[in-house]
Length: 305
Image (cartoon, rainbow, N blue to C red; front, side, top):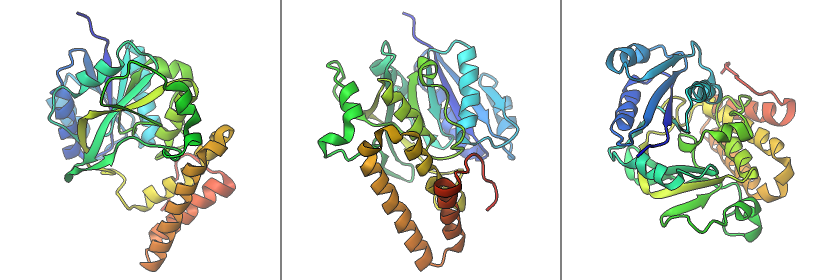
């Protein structure tokens, strides 16, 4: 029996210890046609040396600089397409899972379907019984008008039990047919960090792709191991890129009112908390992100904090 090839692209930037566990997790997968690629964004630790010494079977792409999530993954995607990949799996470098059947089960749900995108449930690494991501929604799941795009494209009768339709699966672990790139193009590098997976899979929805979560598969995610959970870097890109997403998808702005409202609430909550606790660096990063996203429309890499 032949199996479609899956190219696993792990984006790495330092944090060798995290990377070691992520690599082990994918190496133990029992899916026979897996190929692991590490796209390294100029790590300053010995991640690359360790990979080349300990795992010569893994392809290492040295980018020489921190290209960000979008461009770093695009490097890996281009390599995989050049090798004739049938399916592509994007993964962060801070994951852990011991179940060897995860990839096989995910492939079982989408193999033969070019329009399916799938990911697992993601729980917090240090609180493994607590869910971090069960898929994401742009619009209010409780209101009928919220999801006209999803409603239009998810009327399939052969979706297995335990599969949930979502607006998009988190880009930190997501599997899709390689033909998706021919249909919608590569990840938009204007985002640099944060929000680019939302844009990527919303573009997919518009072309008839269905995003799904397999509720029977669970991985553990350390969450922002590279950028930090409450870092100025993360605050800047999150408060900036949300406006790029809304601007890019103005054709469905009415349907995204819930997404916009939740974004404004989150930004306001951060501003108030940072002001109250006198967290000046975070406050400045949020304001700078709002200025660049809403007013001057400056995107790409912003390295000065």
